[in-house]
Length: 162
Image 1: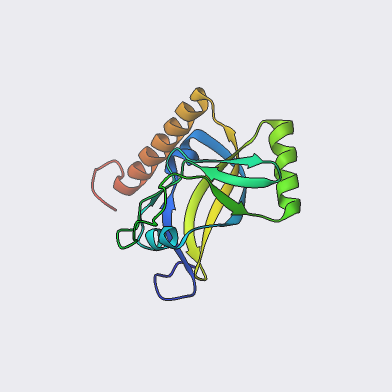
Image 2: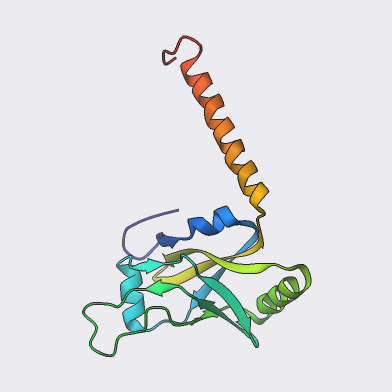
């Protein structure tokens, strides 16, 4: 359910479309974030960017690096640094499971989506495996073939819309 109203629902503020192209996402999970006041205000204004961001496990904590949140213009000189590492809030058992998957099978944690849910900023993390170059080409070819088939069905042989 996506709403742009007050309070309830989900408001998507940023997506990482490059991650969906470069990685095969095998598992998704939701994480809260530790933010400053000026950061949440910038996110609510839609001034966040997930491009080139990644999540890393440091000790028993998970941090997101490279996520850009623009400085809030009305904040005083006590604003925030735009690309500082931000701590993610996950349960201990989720972190242990992630540690096991990342070290054992060569997965990586990729931020996929930043959204506001019930008034709180959440980050959707994907447990991802890198996509090979030939896999990317195959995905593009499949998508184009699907488009061609839908065009052929829609227009038929005569070229007129059915």
